[in-house]
Image 1 (cartoon, rainbow, N blue to C red):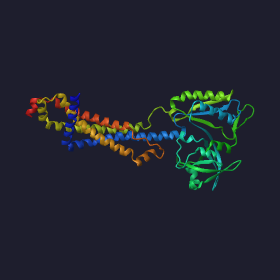
Image 2: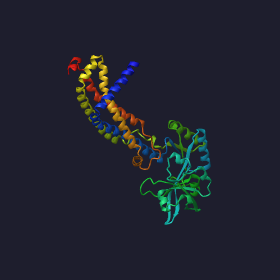
Image 3: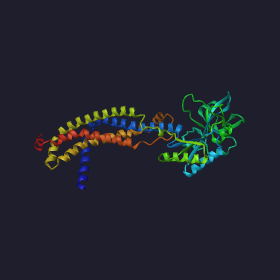
Image 4: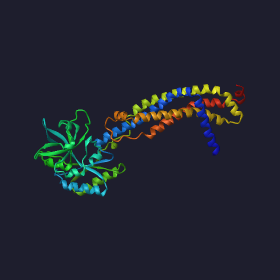
Length: 420
């Protein structure tokens, strides 16, 4: 074992010495290898950032994996008592130890602006909604449990709403008047970023405040033979964030338990709505990765050809040296390994340079913001698999480039090499 390690270390040292001797020619051929490794590694690293941006955007709409959505109604068209439904929901959450859950009440409220009143899309939620849907707040804070005790309801508005009221300092506790059966003053405590250009004003309220500002849902018959329809506010939808590996089991359990708690005639539906439930596993950036990866492989092959050419030229100058080493007992395997290692060591050095360059590019704040487009709150660390891929590619190219010169060196006859 000691002899093997000694030979291995000796081969590395010899290879490094040869690279230093011919460093000018080697460096010229390794530029392409370093650039190609940098390109491959950068593509994988930027793909991780772009993938995180898409993931967070999907989680904003559908929730984190696995997000279960529950809706309930009575088959005869009658309305569920809110306290009955909430009690059944809370019991199920406690039974299965579900930490993150929220009600979601969708609707619109009439808000008085300086230039007139306008209907504003409003969503009533519980504080956990922010974590479950990765809601970003660019100014102020998301709902806390303290907001449930406010006399004036807290409101978190989007930038379009914020711009329309003149972007006041949130430290001054700006308010908005919500018009309805009873006019209510809401205190603006946070601002969320606009998700697209031209977005209309919208806001979040706590679910209890939202329900208090909208009339309760009532069922109105459409006449003989017609189906009933809803008037007033919409009943809440219930969401729970559960471990993905338990999603299927908890879907069945929640549907069964809530339906049993509500009694006969209740229709309960539980569905998974996060993006992971519909993701077919395809990478949206695969075409770009393949294109850049193909160019990088071509550059790597060109760099390998340059290394082969330099190694063959250098080998002709070392024929006498190889013959002398063989005459003193150097085995064919030792000669083969040492010659090949010269290319491997050179390309590994180029690989290290390429990986370092890729890390500097990918983790540059300007590049992160450009790729993330302001949609990433948790930038991923530089992926280890990208660095490993770059180093493996560099090592493979070095071994490939050193194979032919190593075979030529082994085939050299000792007596001919000494006479050379």
